[in-house]
Length: 186
Image (spheres, helix red, strand yellow):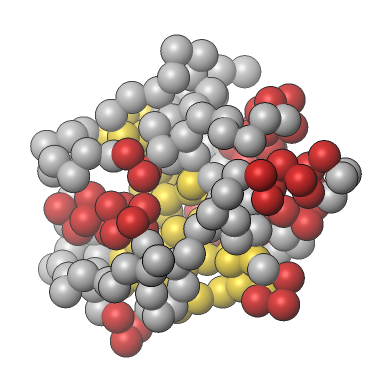
């Protein structure tokens, strides 16, 4: 079930970049009604339901957090561009040696390019919910190498092994939570 975007979102200016024929969403660019001119890139695991016309629970949580922090524009990307509300969708592709289809051919180049233009990058992919641990950790390594030299932030906490920053789906909407610099554990 989809959600609507909240009133602090400039809905008519939301931009979507994806490949619907292959079930991919590379980017949601969502402007917020704030006075600051700060942009943030939030990197999660994979898209669920949100697009240009409808939001979902996780995107609404991200937007509320970013709005309370004063960001004017939120760019939402993922480790994997493949739409899947069930983690088994990604796992199936990985098990069939088709991880490249889950990542999407434009994902990494877009992540790299966008990282050059935002003020902050928040990593929020959460723990490994679909198995394939070595592939998941390798994907995290690949993405963090793309973003080398950038300060990567996380919200609230990371797992004990430090691979997994808290997923945005479970961020507190309390605007008092601070971001912390995330250091890859490798």
